[in-house]
Image 1 (cartoon, rainbow, N blue to C red):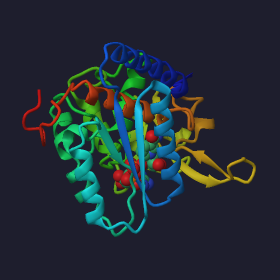
Image 2 (image 1 turned 90 degrees about the horizontal axis):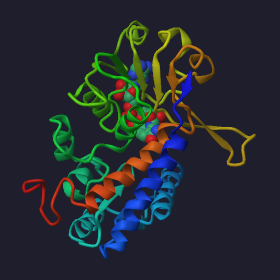
Image 3 (image 1 turned 180 degrees about the vertical axis):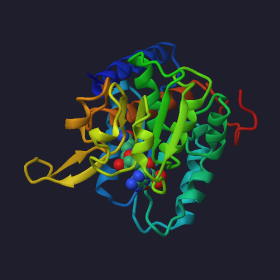
Length: 303
Ligand code: NAD
């Protein structure tokens, strides 16, 4: 079994990005600028946003964090988004999810200009990704592709089972794994909460991507010998023995599953760190206008 070391990869990729930033600076150009919008005081969201801001600093990006009160109205948040859409100093921005219940997440997502949507959640970016056109790809699936690629894991002709069909992980992941590209070219089965006899599918899988949010859900008896197992799940559980008072658990029963697989990603230290790095890569793409020209709205005039 080989560990898919997200920490090592993330460090490697951050150094590569930092080198690009140095070149951008040396050429006298504007350094990439990511803005994060955080609404309310959700503990997990605060941790995620802090790690994104810290990563920006590590690679030499400019970052700005807007902390907005949890009772901000939907219209006030939409106004903020409109300002960011039209602020030329901002290359890309994210609105950290989940949002408070009184705010419609769909409406917020649709309000973000696709050319600044470095989370890759806007339908324009999802549609372009689906058609294998250049676009921002949602950070977690993008990070998983990068992981498969850098570990040189063959995906062509393999059977990939994705557990979970959320818009930010499972659904894009399944679409990416079947695309005519590398990594890709898999035969994909997407399983979800209504799938009967899930083990019937996972036992046939060469690659399993578990993204359901249920700690230690995937057990050794559900995994074929030699399979590649990617654990996306992150659940915070109370643990008095740690300094923070909690620990993170993945969706895979790592201790037992690792004995059966060829490759496995750990939690923590796996996909989570790749996700942050993907966001940096998307921001760099935005700064370099790789997918869209600046000040073109809604993807109609992309390069
Ligand atoms: P979600 O709650 O939006 O979706 C969960 C999916 O799992 C749903 O599609 C549901 O149908 C499926 N599901 C639930 N129970 C199931 C069952 N018993 N059998 C099969 N499928 C089942 O969650 P999400 O946003 O996709 O996140 C999934 C997990 O990944 C969470 O733990 C989340 O914290 C984590 N996550 C990690 C990262 C990262 O960077 N590593 C990023 C995003 C999400």
